[in-house]
Amino acid sequence: MTNKTPLRIAITPGEPAGIGVDLAVALAQQGWDQQLVMLVDPTLLKTRADQLGMPLVIRIFEAHTPPSASKAGEAWVYPIPLTVPCVTGQLNSQNASYVLKTLQIAVDGLTEHNFDALVTGPVHKGVINDAGIPFTGHTEWLAEKAGDIPVVMMLACPSLRVALATTHLPLKQVSDAITQTTLKATLSILHHSLQTDFGIRQPRILVSGLNPHAGEGGHLGTEEIETIAPVCVWAQQQGWQVSLPLPADTLFTPPYLAKADAVLSMYHDQGLTVLKHVGFGHAVNITLGLPFIRTSVDHGTALDLAGTGKAEVGSFIYAIETAITMAAQRKKQRQ
Image 1 (cartoon, rainbow, N blue to C red):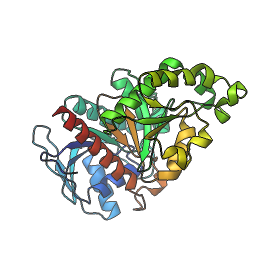
Image 2: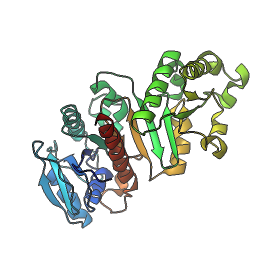
Image 3: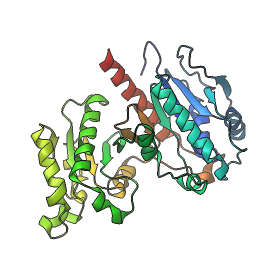
């Protein structure tokens, strides 16, 4: 997408020992009409580029300068030093604070309108927790930094969008986490974002049940009757095109999906198993409800692939393209 003034997209490669750094190098091998700014240790980026045998020229980013398109073989870098040197493929909990610092600086830049969107690479939740820092994921961390506001995780690929009523919870906690209040908030955020970020005037949303067969009329669970269906009826009363709760194994079939702009699933694996089967490698993770745009890759750190040149960059490219589309849509609405 071409704009008269390039958009400025912040990129956090994530875990320094993982493939996020490889993918940042790969992204810099192609030209972009927008300015991609990588919040990373420049020595780490250049060292990994040399390891991969890819040419790379580092350009130091300065916020006060006008945005300029990213040229092939060059990387605009907001320099953030590692806590300790990184060994490719080997986690080090001492660098957990570095990972979170890149995210914090990105959020500060978004708040100050220095960036138009944020695209995040994969982090390793375990090593951040090993450093004594409570962390369940980008989605929850960003929501807290934005003022502990309700947000919605949505993954998308060219043929499917799936939002989640709950995110990173043990399965035994899911039912208690789904209330009419939280579900109304989730549906409201999803509906609004489909309109404002994706330009869909009348979004069509399919809602899954929690239990097998959507509870089988209460014989296999009552959450559909007591919680989910009343919220769906409330949404319909707002004039929204929202289904009543449907069996998850039924709604993810072509006849249903052909009539939907998004699916709202009740828990992580219920929806994302299907999404990743359909679009893995070409899917994007989007956090809805934030005061800024954030997208991410749909995969993990893949430590065993770091530095090998075998990491696939497709999901990162799609995450950037989606962020650009969303940012352009919001910019259009402001004009």
